[in-house]
Length: 343
Ligand code: Q0Z
Image 1 (cartoon, protein in one colour):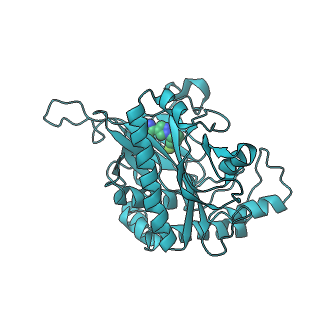
Image 2 (tube, protein in one colour):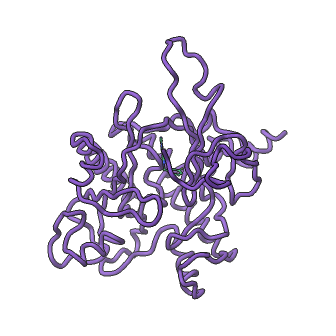
Image 3 (cartoon, protein in one colour):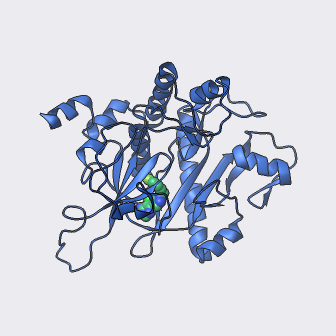
């Protein structure tokens, strides 16, 4: 069972029905039971007609489905700001779909639809996905050394039990992508583990080997694509699960700026930390504001919000090669579509 905090306290879905909140900051969906809540996303259970409950004539039970919703909330230094970034949720959802649709040859994924079964007010920011039995490890791949990987190397000369040469510089590209799994912490930071510990936790060596292989292939495919478009995919995190037939499936969000480090290739220089493609304006502003990086995070001024929104849209357009508007139109969430729907 998931153990994320649920709204209304420990009663969770047994409490009163979740009200529909018409704020871009909160993405509460009327009636749907909330089953997991992250810092910036929510996961709902889909039940009833059109959500897998209809008879399929085979006598087999329908596959359980979830609605995964990305909000416009943003965190820096692990703390969520009270100010949303308009369209951030739709950019991240569009990017996940871009990658899901292009990586099925590497490993199957949980995406069912970005339109069918998505409530109208969540169009563009939500996906209907297959419910999986998730593996209890996060599958991290690093092509460049930074963040906790850099700190671990500095402290021990190794990352996830893999020794690296002496003299590696911060942000340097690694000779080959490293698989550096971590545990899923309910609260606080994920803990780096070595491959053997991941095998122990999953309880199936062959399965963990397949997850590692798929992770490295997904990263390599995406990093090559991004690099051609002027973006460095430094590292990324995948979450895998098993479907009802026991097949390995990649779930969650994939290759988004929230699950990855994207750096502008322009100005890339090893030897120090690199600016984040999407969040750097907020980080720079937050640091200059004197915020001590402890909760509560400060409100973000309008010019920083606008600059950051533009960076998310730019990330979408660079990586996918299409206007962000195309995503809004495909999902019926463009302004005119919304007018039509409302009319
Ligand atoms: C993903 C998470 C989020 C909070 C569980 N297809 C799936 N089947 C079963 N469970 C999951 C998935 Cl993706 C699953 N998470 C991470 C996502 C909000 C936590 F949107 N937790």
